[in-house]
Length: 136
Image (cartoon, rainbow, N blue to C red; front, side, top):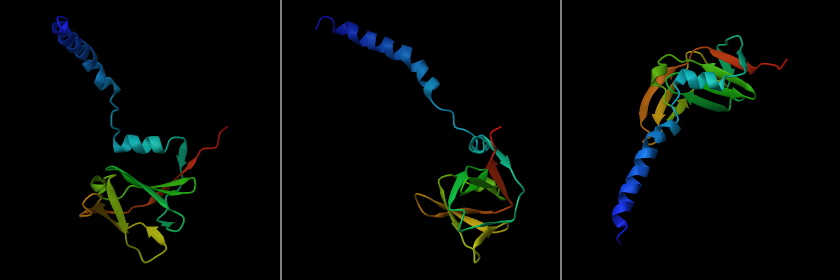
């Protein structure tokens, strides 16, 4: 027990040395634009269109305050809706349409994932296709 007084200061010294290094390992959160750019790496934009097929666009990803990305096979359709600042990747998208297409001017309701309460809406704009660039 006579070595006990030296253990606590030694642990304190180790903690002090390691503490400044901890933030270096923390990942910086990407902005919505950075996240979208990363998702679209290696892809080229095509001609925008007003509608996409709901039957083929099965998967969607919300990019915070930026865009909704719909996946149709290997094509990513990017929609930068009006009121995009309301987009939150934690929201559930609720789209009501009477057609088999999702079109410009359709609205998408946003519902909070945890409370299921309505949290806003966005109005869809044109859909821009992004396809992989062929390797040369």
